[in-house]
Length: 563
Image (tube, rainbow, N blue to C red):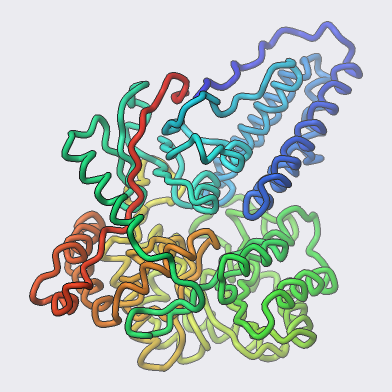
Protein backbone atom coordinates (compact mmCIF):
# COMPACT_ATOMS: atom_id res chain seq x y z
CA UNK A 1 0.00 0.00 0.00
CA UNK A 2 1.38 3.47 -0.82
CA UNK A 3 3.31 5.33 1.88
CA UNK A 4 1.62 8.21 3.73
CA UNK A 5 2.15 11.75 2.50
CA UNK A 6 5.31 13.36 3.91
CA UNK A 7 5.02 15.80 6.76
CA UNK A 8 4.31 19.31 5.38
CA UNK A 9 7.29 21.65 5.52
CA UNK A 10 7.50 24.33 8.21
CA UNK A 11 8.20 26.98 5.60
CA UNK A 12 6.45 30.27 6.49
CA UNK A 13 3.42 31.10 4.39
CA UNK A 14 3.70 33.56 1.53
CA UNK A 15 -0.05 34.25 1.71
CA UNK A 16 -2.01 36.30 4.18
CA UNK A 17 -3.43 34.49 7.25
CA UNK A 18 -6.93 35.13 5.89
CA UNK A 19 -6.09 33.45 2.59
CA UNK A 20 -4.52 30.45 4.34
CA UNK A 21 -7.52 30.16 6.62
CA UNK A 22 -9.86 30.13 3.62
CA UNK A 23 -7.80 27.32 2.09
CA UNK A 24 -7.86 25.28 5.30
CA UNK A 25 -11.58 25.80 5.87
CA UNK A 26 -12.42 24.76 2.31
CA UNK A 27 -10.21 21.64 2.53
CA UNK A 28 -11.72 20.57 5.84
CA UNK A 29 -15.24 20.97 4.46
CA UNK A 30 -14.41 19.12 1.22
CA UNK A 31 -12.80 16.26 3.13
CA UNK A 32 -15.79 15.91 5.43
CA UNK A 33 -18.11 15.84 2.43
CA UNK A 34 -15.99 13.19 0.67
CA UNK A 35 -15.85 10.94 3.73
CA UNK A 36 -19.58 11.34 4.29
CA UNK A 37 -20.27 10.44 0.65
CA UNK A 38 -18.14 7.30 1.01
CA UNK A 39 -20.23 6.34 4.02
CA UNK A 40 -23.45 6.81 2.08
CA UNK A 41 -22.15 4.52 -0.68
CA UNK A 42 -20.93 1.87 1.75
CA UNK A 43 -23.99 1.82 4.03
CA UNK A 44 -24.38 -0.35 7.16
CA UNK A 45 -21.77 -0.14 9.90
CA UNK A 46 -19.40 1.67 7.53
CA UNK A 47 -21.87 4.53 7.28
CA UNK A 48 -21.81 5.03 11.05
CA UNK A 49 -18.01 4.83 11.24
CA UNK A 50 -17.43 7.26 8.39
CA UNK A 51 -20.06 9.68 9.67
CA UNK A 52 -18.06 9.86 12.89
CA UNK A 53 -14.90 10.50 10.86
CA UNK A 54 -16.61 13.30 8.93
CA UNK A 55 -17.46 14.94 12.25
CA UNK A 56 -13.74 14.91 13.09
CA UNK A 57 -13.03 17.11 10.06
CA UNK A 58 -15.81 19.46 11.20
CA UNK A 59 -14.81 19.61 14.86
CA UNK A 60 -14.98 23.29 15.94
CA UNK A 61 -12.18 22.92 18.50
CA UNK A 62 -9.86 21.59 15.83
CA UNK A 63 -10.90 24.37 13.45
CA UNK A 64 -10.05 26.95 16.13
CA UNK A 65 -6.64 25.33 16.57
CA UNK A 66 -6.00 25.48 12.82
CA UNK A 67 -6.99 29.14 12.74
CA UNK A 68 -4.65 30.00 15.61
CA UNK A 69 -1.73 28.31 13.86
CA UNK A 70 -2.48 30.05 10.55
CA UNK A 71 -2.59 33.39 12.33
CA UNK A 72 0.90 32.55 13.61
CA UNK A 73 2.20 32.41 10.04
CA UNK A 74 1.93 28.73 9.17
CA UNK A 75 0.70 27.44 5.85
CA UNK A 76 -2.71 25.77 5.81
CA UNK A 77 -1.00 22.39 5.23
CA UNK A 78 1.30 22.76 8.23
CA UNK A 79 -1.44 24.19 10.45
CA UNK A 80 -3.75 21.26 9.66
CA UNK A 81 -0.95 18.76 10.23
CA UNK A 82 0.00 20.21 13.62
CA UNK A 83 -3.59 20.64 14.81
CA UNK A 84 -4.49 17.04 13.99
CA UNK A 85 -1.22 15.78 15.50
CA UNK A 86 -1.95 17.56 18.76
CA UNK A 87 -5.48 16.16 18.87
CA UNK A 88 -4.15 12.68 18.04
CA UNK A 89 -1.55 12.77 20.81
CA UNK A 90 -4.24 13.79 23.28
CA UNK A 91 -6.41 10.81 22.31
CA UNK A 92 -3.46 8.41 22.54
CA UNK A 93 -2.72 9.63 26.06
CA UNK A 94 -6.33 8.90 27.06
CA UNK A 95 -6.08 5.25 26.04
CA UNK A 96 -8.99 2.90 25.40
CA UNK A 97 -11.69 3.92 22.95
CA UNK A 98 -10.22 7.35 22.32
CA UNK A 99 -6.75 5.98 21.55
CA UNK A 100 -8.41 3.75 18.96
CA UNK A 101 -9.72 6.86 17.21
CA UNK A 102 -6.16 8.21 16.74
CA UNK A 103 -5.76 6.14 13.58
CA UNK A 104 -8.94 7.67 12.20
CA UNK A 105 -7.57 11.16 12.90
CA UNK A 106 -4.37 10.38 11.00
CA UNK A 107 -6.44 9.40 7.98
CA UNK A 108 -8.55 12.57 8.09
CA UNK A 109 -5.41 14.69 8.43
CA UNK A 110 -3.83 13.01 5.40
CA UNK A 111 -6.95 13.57 3.33
CA UNK A 112 -7.15 17.26 4.23
CA UNK A 113 -3.45 17.81 3.45
CA UNK A 114 -3.83 15.94 0.14
CA UNK A 115 -6.75 18.20 -0.76
CA UNK A 116 -4.66 21.28 0.00
CA UNK A 117 -1.74 19.99 -2.07
CA UNK A 118 -3.97 18.97 -4.96
CA UNK A 119 -2.80 15.36 -4.90
CA UNK A 120 -4.76 12.12 -4.43
CA UNK A 121 -5.18 10.97 -0.85
CA UNK A 122 -3.20 7.84 0.03
CA UNK A 123 -5.41 4.87 -0.62
CA UNK A 124 -5.77 1.33 -1.89
CA UNK A 125 -3.81 0.18 -4.96
CA UNK A 126 -5.99 -0.74 -7.93
CA UNK A 127 -4.24 -3.36 -10.06
CA UNK A 128 -5.94 -5.47 -12.71
CA UNK A 129 -5.62 -8.73 -10.75
CA UNK A 130 -6.72 -10.16 -7.40
CA UNK A 131 -4.39 -9.77 -4.44
CA UNK A 132 -3.92 -9.93 -0.68
CA UNK A 133 -3.66 -6.41 0.73
CA UNK A 134 -0.89 -5.84 3.29
CA UNK A 135 -0.69 -2.58 5.23
CA UNK A 136 0.42 -1.12 8.54
CA UNK A 137 -3.23 -0.24 9.11
CA UNK A 138 -6.14 0.70 6.89
CA UNK A 139 -8.26 3.82 7.10
CA UNK A 140 -11.99 3.27 7.65
CA UNK A 141 -12.79 5.25 4.49
CA UNK A 142 -10.68 2.78 2.48
CA UNK A 143 -11.81 -0.38 4.26
CA UNK A 144 -15.45 0.51 3.67
CA UNK A 145 -15.05 0.64 -0.10
CA UNK A 146 -12.67 -2.25 -0.76
CA UNK A 147 -13.31 -4.02 -4.08
CA UNK A 148 -14.09 -7.52 -2.85
CA UNK A 149 -13.60 -8.93 -6.34
CA UNK A 150 -9.94 -7.97 -6.13
CA UNK A 151 -9.04 -7.90 -2.43
CA UNK A 152 -8.98 -11.56 -1.42
CA UNK A 153 -7.81 -10.87 2.12
CA UNK A 154 -6.47 -8.12 4.36
CA UNK A 155 -3.41 -8.29 6.63
CA UNK A 156 -2.37 -5.42 8.91
CA UNK A 157 0.56 -5.14 11.30
CA UNK A 158 -1.32 -2.84 13.67
CA UNK A 159 -4.78 -2.71 15.18
CA UNK A 160 -6.73 -5.11 17.33
CA UNK A 161 -10.06 -6.92 17.23
CA UNK A 162 -11.96 -3.76 18.16
CA UNK A 163 -10.24 -1.37 15.76
CA UNK A 164 -12.39 0.13 13.03
CA UNK A 165 -10.39 -1.82 10.47
CA UNK A 166 -11.36 -5.10 12.14
CA UNK A 167 -14.98 -4.07 12.71
CA UNK A 168 -15.51 -3.00 9.10
CA UNK A 169 -13.70 -6.08 7.76
CA UNK A 170 -16.13 -8.28 9.69
CA UNK A 171 -19.08 -6.20 8.56
CA UNK A 172 -18.07 -6.67 4.91
CA UNK A 173 -17.16 -10.35 5.43
CA UNK A 174 -13.56 -9.65 4.40
CA UNK A 175 -11.01 -12.33 5.28
CA UNK A 176 -8.73 -10.37 7.62
CA UNK A 177 -5.97 -10.82 10.16
CA UNK A 178 -5.21 -7.61 12.06
CA UNK A 179 -2.22 -7.01 14.31
CA UNK A 180 -0.24 -9.75 12.51
CA UNK A 181 3.37 -9.99 13.66
CA UNK A 182 5.79 -9.74 10.74
CA UNK A 183 3.14 -8.53 8.31
CA UNK A 184 5.37 -5.79 6.92
CA UNK A 185 8.13 -8.31 6.25
CA UNK A 186 6.01 -10.03 3.58
CA UNK A 187 7.60 -9.58 0.18
CA UNK A 188 5.80 -8.39 -2.94
CA UNK A 189 4.80 -11.39 -5.00
CA UNK A 190 4.98 -13.77 -2.05
CA UNK A 191 2.30 -16.44 -1.78
CA UNK A 192 0.40 -16.41 1.52
CA UNK A 193 -2.44 -18.31 3.17
CA UNK A 194 -4.65 -16.14 5.34
CA UNK A 195 -6.58 -18.09 7.97
CA UNK A 196 -8.99 -15.66 9.61
CA UNK A 197 -10.41 -18.23 12.03
CA UNK A 198 -6.98 -19.10 13.43
CA UNK A 199 -5.75 -15.52 13.12
CA UNK A 200 -2.68 -16.73 11.24
CA UNK A 201 -0.76 -15.91 8.07
CA UNK A 202 1.39 -18.57 6.44
CA UNK A 203 4.10 -17.05 4.24
CA UNK A 204 5.62 -19.02 1.39
CA UNK A 205 3.50 -22.10 2.17
CA UNK A 206 4.58 -25.55 1.10
CA UNK A 207 2.72 -27.50 -1.55
CA UNK A 208 1.13 -29.54 1.24
CA UNK A 209 -0.02 -26.33 3.00
CA UNK A 210 -1.62 -25.05 -0.18
CA UNK A 211 -3.28 -28.39 -0.88
CA UNK A 212 -4.70 -28.50 2.65
CA UNK A 213 -6.06 -24.95 2.34
CA UNK A 214 -7.63 -25.72 -1.02
CA UNK A 215 -9.18 -28.89 0.40
CA UNK A 216 -10.68 -26.93 3.27
CA UNK A 217 -12.14 -24.41 0.85
CA UNK A 218 -13.57 -27.17 -1.31
CA UNK A 219 -15.17 -28.84 1.71
CA UNK A 220 -16.63 -25.54 2.83
CA UNK A 221 -18.12 -24.84 -0.59
CA UNK A 222 -19.62 -28.34 -0.60
CA UNK A 223 -21.56 -27.69 2.58
CA UNK A 224 -25.30 -27.24 2.32
CA UNK A 225 -26.51 -23.68 2.05
CA UNK A 226 -26.48 -21.80 5.34
CA UNK A 227 -29.71 -22.36 7.25
CA UNK A 228 -32.13 -19.51 7.62
CA UNK A 229 -34.48 -18.69 10.44
CA UNK A 230 -33.82 -19.00 14.15
CA UNK A 231 -30.41 -20.06 15.42
CA UNK A 232 -30.35 -23.56 16.83
CA UNK A 233 -28.11 -26.55 17.38
CA UNK A 234 -28.41 -29.83 15.51
CA UNK A 235 -30.56 -31.29 18.29
CA UNK A 236 -32.99 -28.37 18.15
CA UNK A 237 -31.60 -26.44 21.13
CA UNK A 238 -32.47 -22.79 20.49
CA UNK A 239 -29.62 -20.27 20.42
CA UNK A 240 -31.04 -16.88 19.45
CA UNK A 241 -28.71 -14.94 17.15
CA UNK A 242 -28.89 -11.20 17.69
CA UNK A 243 -27.25 -8.11 16.22
CA UNK A 244 -24.84 -5.58 17.68
CA UNK A 245 -25.93 -2.13 16.49
CA UNK A 246 -24.57 1.39 16.89
CA UNK A 247 -27.53 3.34 15.55
CA UNK A 248 -31.21 2.91 14.81
CA UNK A 249 -30.48 3.41 11.10
CA UNK A 250 -28.70 0.03 10.99
CA UNK A 251 -31.81 -1.90 12.08
CA UNK A 252 -33.11 -2.68 8.59
CA UNK A 253 -29.78 -4.20 7.51
CA UNK A 254 -29.71 -6.40 10.62
CA UNK A 255 -33.25 -7.66 10.01
CA UNK A 256 -32.39 -8.38 6.38
CA UNK A 257 -29.44 -10.51 7.47
CA UNK A 258 -31.54 -12.62 9.80
CA UNK A 259 -31.08 -11.04 13.21
CA UNK A 260 -33.64 -12.34 15.69
CA UNK A 261 -33.39 -9.12 17.66
CA UNK A 262 -30.71 -6.88 19.12
CA UNK A 263 -28.24 -8.17 21.68
CA UNK A 264 -26.32 -4.92 22.08
CA UNK A 265 -27.47 -1.45 21.15
CA UNK A 266 -24.69 1.03 21.86
CA UNK A 267 -26.21 4.35 22.87
CA UNK A 268 -22.94 6.32 22.71
CA UNK A 269 -23.74 7.69 19.23
CA UNK A 270 -26.36 9.94 20.82
CA UNK A 271 -23.82 11.44 23.20
CA UNK A 272 -20.30 11.47 21.74
CA UNK A 273 -20.78 14.39 19.37
CA UNK A 274 -22.75 16.49 21.86
CA UNK A 275 -21.55 19.29 24.10
CA UNK A 276 -24.50 18.67 26.43
CA UNK A 277 -26.48 15.59 27.36
CA UNK A 278 -29.32 15.04 24.87
CA UNK A 279 -32.81 15.64 26.19
CA UNK A 280 -35.22 12.89 27.18
CA UNK A 281 -37.30 13.73 24.10
CA UNK A 282 -34.34 13.51 21.70
CA UNK A 283 -33.29 10.17 23.11
CA UNK A 284 -36.84 8.81 23.15
CA UNK A 285 -37.20 9.54 19.44
CA UNK A 286 -34.17 7.39 18.58
CA UNK A 287 -35.10 4.56 20.95
CA UNK A 288 -38.63 4.47 19.58
CA UNK A 289 -37.25 4.21 16.04
CA UNK A 290 -35.08 1.28 17.10
CA UNK A 291 -37.78 -0.61 18.99
CA UNK A 292 -40.30 -0.13 16.19
CA UNK A 293 -37.95 -2.01 13.84
CA UNK A 294 -38.13 -5.16 16.00
CA UNK A 295 -41.81 -5.72 16.89
CA UNK A 296 -42.20 -8.60 19.33
CA UNK A 297 -38.44 -9.24 19.42
CA UNK A 298 -35.83 -8.79 22.12
CA UNK A 299 -33.85 -5.55 22.02
CA UNK A 300 -31.04 -5.18 24.56
CA UNK A 301 -29.94 -1.59 25.10
CA UNK A 302 -26.75 -0.73 26.95
CA UNK A 303 -26.84 2.39 29.09
CA UNK A 304 -24.29 5.03 28.14
CA UNK A 305 -20.84 3.44 28.26
CA UNK A 306 -18.63 6.49 28.55
CA UNK A 307 -16.29 8.10 30.99
CA UNK A 308 -12.58 8.66 31.13
CA UNK A 309 -11.75 6.67 27.99
CA UNK A 310 -14.64 8.23 26.04
CA UNK A 311 -14.60 11.68 27.63
CA UNK A 312 -17.73 13.77 27.58
CA UNK A 313 -17.51 17.28 28.93
CA UNK A 314 -20.88 16.92 30.63
CA UNK A 315 -20.07 13.51 32.15
CA UNK A 316 -16.40 13.20 33.04
CA UNK A 317 -13.48 14.79 31.23
CA UNK A 318 -11.04 14.72 34.14
CA UNK A 319 -7.51 13.59 33.33
CA UNK A 320 -6.81 10.09 34.68
CA UNK A 321 -3.53 8.21 34.63
CA UNK A 322 -5.19 4.90 33.81
CA UNK A 323 -8.62 5.58 32.29
CA UNK A 324 -9.32 1.90 31.60
CA UNK A 325 -9.49 1.46 35.37
CA UNK A 326 -11.06 4.81 36.11
CA UNK A 327 -14.44 6.52 36.29
CA UNK A 328 -16.14 4.87 33.34
CA UNK A 329 -19.35 3.02 32.54
CA UNK A 330 -21.79 2.77 35.42
CA UNK A 331 -19.30 4.48 37.73
CA UNK A 332 -19.46 7.65 35.64
CA UNK A 333 -23.24 7.45 35.39
CA UNK A 334 -23.64 7.14 39.15
CA UNK A 335 -21.53 10.24 39.59
CA UNK A 336 -23.94 12.02 37.22
CA UNK A 337 -27.19 10.30 38.10
CA UNK A 338 -29.49 12.72 36.32
CA UNK A 339 -27.98 11.70 32.97
CA UNK A 340 -28.70 8.07 33.79
CA UNK A 341 -32.22 8.89 35.00
CA UNK A 342 -32.96 10.78 31.78
CA UNK A 343 -31.72 7.91 29.64
CA UNK A 344 -33.71 5.27 31.50
CA UNK A 345 -36.80 7.50 31.40
CA UNK A 346 -36.45 7.92 27.64
CA UNK A 347 -36.15 4.15 27.25
CA UNK A 348 -39.21 3.52 29.43
CA UNK A 349 -41.21 6.05 27.40
CA UNK A 350 -40.16 4.43 24.11
CA UNK A 351 -41.03 1.01 25.48
CA UNK A 352 -44.52 2.21 26.39
CA UNK A 353 -45.36 3.14 22.77
CA UNK A 354 -43.82 0.12 20.99
CA UNK A 355 -44.22 -3.65 21.30
CA UNK A 356 -40.60 -4.80 21.23
CA UNK A 357 -39.27 -6.75 24.22
CA UNK A 358 -36.95 -4.14 25.75
CA UNK A 359 -34.08 -5.23 28.00
CA UNK A 360 -31.69 -2.62 29.47
CA UNK A 361 -28.24 -3.32 30.91
CA UNK A 362 -25.56 -1.42 32.78
CA UNK A 363 -21.96 -1.27 31.49
CA UNK A 364 -18.82 -2.08 33.49
CA UNK A 365 -20.53 -3.57 36.55
CA UNK A 366 -18.03 -4.95 39.05
CA UNK A 367 -19.98 -5.46 42.29
CA UNK A 368 -23.27 -6.77 43.66
CA UNK A 369 -23.99 -3.34 45.11
CA UNK A 370 -23.71 -1.71 41.68
CA UNK A 371 -26.13 -4.30 40.32
CA UNK A 372 -28.67 -3.53 43.00
CA UNK A 373 -28.30 0.20 42.41
CA UNK A 374 -28.96 -0.08 38.69
CA UNK A 375 -31.83 -2.55 38.82
CA UNK A 376 -33.59 -0.60 41.60
CA UNK A 377 -33.30 2.67 39.69
CA UNK A 378 -34.48 1.09 36.45
CA UNK A 379 -37.54 -0.44 38.09
CA UNK A 380 -38.30 2.85 39.80
CA UNK A 381 -38.41 4.49 36.38
CA UNK A 382 -40.69 1.86 34.84
CA UNK A 383 -38.37 -0.58 33.09
CA UNK A 384 -39.22 -4.27 33.37
CA UNK A 385 -36.09 -6.25 32.38
CA UNK A 386 -32.77 -5.07 33.75
CA UNK A 387 -29.36 -6.70 33.54
CA UNK A 388 -25.63 -6.15 33.63
CA UNK A 389 -22.63 -6.38 31.37
CA UNK A 390 -20.01 -8.84 32.59
CA UNK A 391 -16.74 -7.25 31.47
CA UNK A 392 -14.78 -7.32 34.73
CA UNK A 393 -13.49 -10.57 36.27
CA UNK A 394 -15.07 -9.69 39.64
CA UNK A 395 -18.51 -9.69 38.02
CA UNK A 396 -17.89 -13.13 36.52
CA UNK A 397 -16.61 -14.52 39.81
CA UNK A 398 -19.69 -13.19 41.63
CA UNK A 399 -22.12 -14.04 38.83
CA UNK A 400 -24.30 -16.21 41.08
CA UNK A 401 -24.85 -13.28 43.46
CA UNK A 402 -25.15 -10.64 40.75
CA UNK A 403 -27.74 -12.70 38.85
CA UNK A 404 -29.75 -13.07 42.03
CA UNK A 405 -30.63 -9.37 41.54
CA UNK A 406 -30.27 -8.91 37.77
CA UNK A 407 -32.68 -10.36 35.23
CA UNK A 408 -29.91 -11.30 32.81
CA UNK A 409 -26.21 -10.96 32.06
CA UNK A 410 -24.43 -10.16 28.81
CA UNK A 411 -20.73 -10.95 28.57
CA UNK A 412 -18.53 -8.42 26.80
CA UNK A 413 -15.62 -10.63 25.81
CA UNK A 414 -13.49 -7.76 24.48
CA UNK A 415 -13.12 -6.08 27.87
CA UNK A 416 -13.31 -9.33 29.83
CA UNK A 417 -10.27 -10.59 27.92
CA UNK A 418 -8.48 -7.28 28.39
CA UNK A 419 -8.96 -7.21 32.13
CA UNK A 420 -8.40 -10.93 32.70
CA UNK A 421 -5.04 -10.92 30.92
CA UNK A 422 -4.06 -7.36 31.92
CA UNK A 423 -3.44 -6.41 28.27
CA UNK A 424 -4.80 -3.21 26.73
CA UNK A 425 -6.95 -4.42 23.85
CA UNK A 426 -5.81 -1.50 21.67
CA UNK A 427 -2.08 -1.80 22.31
CA UNK A 428 -0.33 -3.57 19.45
CA UNK A 429 2.60 -4.74 21.60
CA UNK A 430 0.29 -6.96 23.68
CA UNK A 431 -2.23 -7.81 20.95
CA UNK A 432 -1.34 -11.50 21.20
CA UNK A 433 -2.95 -11.60 24.64
CA UNK A 434 -6.28 -10.32 23.29
CA UNK A 435 -7.68 -13.74 22.44
CA UNK A 436 -11.03 -14.84 23.91
CA UNK A 437 -10.03 -18.48 23.34
CA UNK A 438 -7.78 -18.20 26.38
CA UNK A 439 -8.82 -20.78 29.00
CA UNK A 440 -8.80 -18.14 31.74
CA UNK A 441 -11.41 -16.14 29.83
CA UNK A 442 -13.43 -19.24 28.97
CA UNK A 443 -13.41 -20.32 32.62
CA UNK A 444 -14.98 -17.00 33.60
CA UNK A 445 -17.56 -17.34 30.84
CA UNK A 446 -18.35 -20.81 32.20
CA UNK A 447 -18.79 -19.39 35.71
CA UNK A 448 -21.39 -16.96 34.40
CA UNK A 449 -23.07 -19.68 32.32
CA UNK A 450 -23.40 -22.01 35.30
CA UNK A 451 -24.80 -19.22 37.47
CA UNK A 452 -27.37 -18.44 34.80
CA UNK A 453 -28.42 -22.09 34.55
CA UNK A 454 -28.72 -22.45 38.33
CA UNK A 455 -30.91 -19.35 38.62
CA UNK A 456 -32.72 -19.79 35.28
CA UNK A 457 -31.40 -16.43 34.07
CA UNK A 458 -30.36 -15.77 30.43
CA UNK A 459 -26.66 -15.28 29.71
CA UNK A 460 -25.65 -13.77 26.39
CA UNK A 461 -22.35 -12.90 24.74
CA UNK A 462 -22.16 -9.64 22.80
CA UNK A 463 -18.40 -9.34 22.44
CA UNK A 464 -16.50 -10.12 19.25
CA UNK A 465 -16.04 -13.74 20.38
CA UNK A 466 -19.65 -14.44 19.39
CA UNK A 467 -18.78 -13.79 15.73
CA UNK A 468 -16.18 -16.58 15.65
CA UNK A 469 -18.26 -19.55 14.41
CA UNK A 470 -16.37 -22.33 16.18
CA UNK A 471 -15.87 -20.33 19.37
CA UNK A 472 -19.62 -19.65 19.32
CA UNK A 473 -20.17 -23.40 19.64
CA UNK A 474 -17.81 -23.51 22.63
CA UNK A 475 -19.59 -20.56 24.26
CA UNK A 476 -22.91 -22.39 24.01
CA UNK A 477 -21.23 -25.40 25.59
CA UNK A 478 -20.23 -23.14 28.49
CA UNK A 479 -23.85 -22.23 29.18
CA UNK A 480 -24.35 -19.15 27.00
CA UNK A 481 -27.97 -18.92 25.85
CA UNK A 482 -27.76 -16.27 23.09
CA UNK A 483 -25.12 -14.73 20.85
CA UNK A 484 -24.94 -11.19 19.50
CA UNK A 485 -22.62 -10.02 16.74
CA UNK A 486 -22.14 -7.87 13.65
CA UNK A 487 -25.00 -8.70 11.25
CA UNK A 488 -22.47 -9.84 8.63
CA UNK A 489 -21.41 -12.73 10.89
CA UNK A 490 -24.89 -14.13 11.50
CA UNK A 491 -25.00 -16.54 8.55
CA UNK A 492 -21.68 -18.24 9.32
CA UNK A 493 -22.46 -18.63 13.01
CA UNK A 494 -25.95 -19.96 12.27
CA UNK A 495 -24.49 -22.55 9.88
CA UNK A 496 -21.83 -23.67 12.37
CA UNK A 497 -24.24 -24.07 15.28
CA UNK A 498 -26.51 -26.25 13.16
CA UNK A 499 -23.72 -28.84 12.85
CA UNK A 500 -23.47 -29.74 16.53
CA UNK A 501 -25.61 -31.01 19.39
CA UNK A 502 -25.53 -29.48 22.85
CA UNK A 503 -23.60 -32.52 24.07
CA UNK A 504 -20.93 -31.95 21.43
CA UNK A 505 -20.74 -28.24 22.28
CA UNK A 506 -20.23 -29.11 25.94
CA UNK A 507 -17.50 -31.61 25.00
CA UNK A 508 -15.67 -28.95 22.98
CA UNK A 509 -15.98 -26.54 25.90
CA UNK A 510 -14.39 -29.12 28.20
CA UNK A 511 -11.48 -29.55 25.79
CA UNK A 512 -10.92 -25.80 25.55
CA UNK A 513 -10.99 -25.36 29.32
CA UNK A 514 -8.41 -28.11 29.76
CA UNK A 515 -5.89 -26.32 27.52
CA UNK A 516 -3.08 -24.10 28.76
CA UNK A 517 -3.29 -21.33 26.17
CA UNK A 518 -5.58 -19.80 23.58
CA UNK A 519 -3.62 -21.53 20.83
CA UNK A 520 -3.94 -24.93 22.53
CA UNK A 521 -7.65 -24.40 23.23
CA UNK A 522 -8.44 -23.60 19.61
CA UNK A 523 -6.20 -26.43 18.36
CA UNK A 524 -7.82 -28.97 20.70
CA UNK A 525 -11.32 -28.12 19.47
CA UNK A 526 -10.22 -28.12 15.82
CA UNK A 527 -8.59 -31.51 16.28
CA UNK A 528 -11.71 -32.94 17.91
CA UNK A 529 -13.81 -31.45 15.14
CA UNK A 530 -11.87 -33.09 12.35
CA UNK A 531 -10.77 -36.29 14.15
CA UNK A 532 -13.38 -37.22 16.76
CA UNK A 533 -12.25 -39.79 19.30
CA UNK A 534 -14.25 -42.41 21.12
CA UNK A 535 -14.79 -39.92 23.97
CA UNK A 536 -16.31 -37.36 21.63
CA UNK A 537 -20.12 -37.58 21.46
CA UNK A 538 -19.88 -36.94 17.72
CA UNK A 539 -17.85 -40.12 17.18
CA UNK A 540 -20.98 -42.24 17.41
CA UNK A 541 -22.22 -40.66 14.21
CA UNK A 542 -19.75 -40.71 11.30
CA UNK A 543 -21.69 -38.04 9.49
CA UNK A 544 -21.02 -35.58 12.29
CA UNK A 545 -17.39 -34.99 11.36
CA UNK A 546 -17.30 -31.52 9.85
CA UNK A 547 -14.70 -29.56 7.91
CA UNK A 548 -12.84 -26.87 9.74
CA UNK A 549 -14.63 -23.54 9.69
CA UNK A 550 -11.89 -21.29 8.43
CA UNK A 551 -11.48 -18.90 5.56
CA UNK A 552 -8.03 -19.56 4.06
CA UNK A 553 -7.43 -17.99 0.69
CA UNK A 554 -4.19 -18.13 -1.26
CA UNK A 555 -2.97 -15.33 -3.47
CA UNK A 556 0.02 -13.13 -4.16
CA UNK A 557 0.92 -9.88 -2.48
CA UNK A 558 2.09 -7.48 -5.17
CA UNK A 559 4.09 -4.33 -5.60
CA UNK A 560 2.31 -1.53 -3.80
CA UNK A 561 0.69 -3.73 -1.16
CA UNK A 562 3.08 -2.56 1.51
CA UNK A 563 3.37 0.93 3.00
